[in-house]
Length: 155
Image (cartoon, rainbow, N blue to C red; front, side):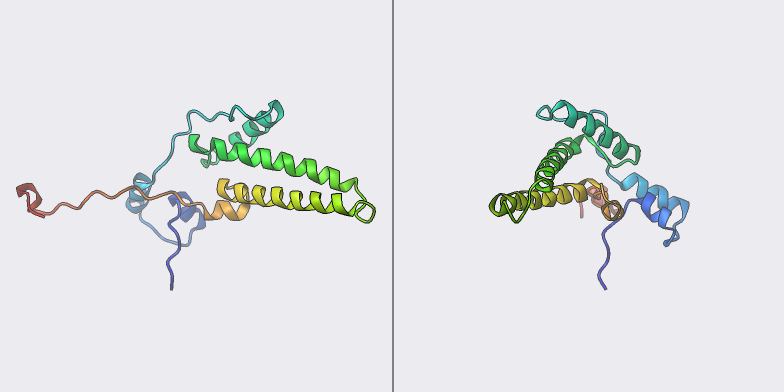
């Protein structure tokens, strides 16, 4: 049997499948690493509309404690990929695949590429239900354990 990935304590408690003492829960909370979320800003290369969408999604992710300062570029790339997907999709809807086969084929490939990019970024950012359930907070580096001889310079 393979052990699953470590999950944030709030998720473990919410699932209710593991019974932990209050002390164990508190210890897990202290050991979880949280990135700062005090400077969440859209990347400068986004358009005005993209920045608006960035702020909307970033606020929702911050509300559920998923968004941090480190995620700004990834969210920006997701928004750009999604915008490109929509543009290509709109063009495809107006094309007859039988009359414009070559253009339709090129646009289909582009649409698929942007859809894959969106899916990857969405999974990384927790924008899907399944990805939010899999999100794991990294474990902080452990301090070396001390024993009764460590004060004398022994191991």
